Image (tube, rainbow, N blue to C red):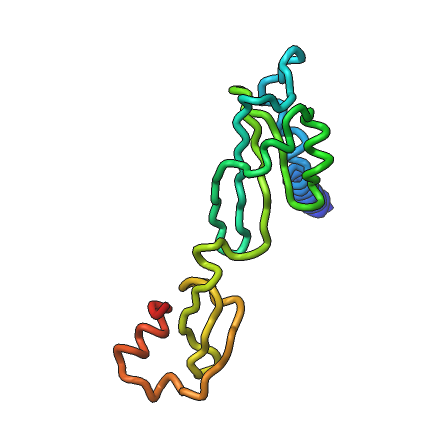
Length: 168
């Protein structure tokens, strides 16, 4: 009888620790901001003539980040942070904030390939046949077409290159 209670206590402790881990994993972002410095209330969060505006685009397919100056800076002049956030919403993939140096950052998430990788193709294998994949080597998510060439009919060097994804 005593071993039975010990087993129940052990199972209960494991379930509680699993539940606590699950809760922390999904609510981490909510409590993560405790370590950040509070924003000064006297700071002016408005775009002025000399405000540097940076556009950061993160491309989800290849995970590249492309940073550039924001071309529409003149349209943001005189706008507050809240007004800019209404123009570039989170639902559309944007995050907007002012850095401590007074520069504005517009961070955009783009569900595509970066301009450098957008037109790349590489050879790979699909069910024993040579296939053409979209994107750079290592990203075998989207097949452009499957050829009628069986991989085993190719010379050893070419077969090895295709199998390892070295033919872009």
